[in-house]
Amino acid sequence: MRDITIDTYPGNDAGFQAIYTYNPKDGLHTWGTAFYGFADKETGMANVGNMTLKVNGRTLQPLRIKTKVRNVGDTVLEVVTAYFSRSIYEQIATAESVIAEIGPAVLELPHYDRKDMRIILGKVPPSGPPQTASTDQ
Image (tube, rainbow, N blue to C red; front, side):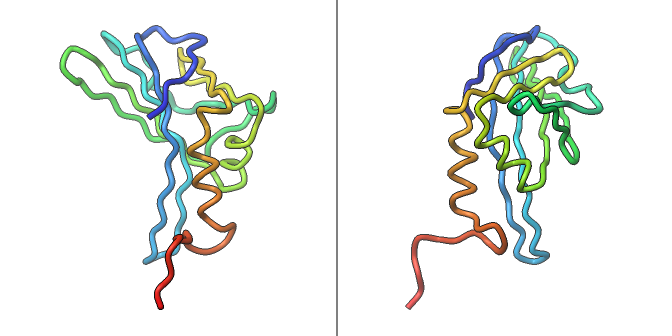
């Protein structure tokens, strides 16, 4: 998880994580981002029906989102996971500017914090399963 710049968030801290999974049984790739909000009480970040991303000034929406709220000791953890097509994921990964608007939260994702997304894209060819650095002989 990476720290991100908080423009507006009524909680204490926020983080971001790049997500990618491949299911070889059905050949499905899942491209996503998870946003984490840490607060003393629920802020409403995980009670949203949708979210938007401003990618180089262009407004984009995920294909779907999944939200959850958990208590971790005295802290409330709000998680919003957004799923995208590969092409939108790539736009987010390589953009100069990305701002996520999730309920009461406005979070900026600096270019260097999206490095994991670019690494994932470099390891997964545009079509087909992920590549590995080793080969069987």
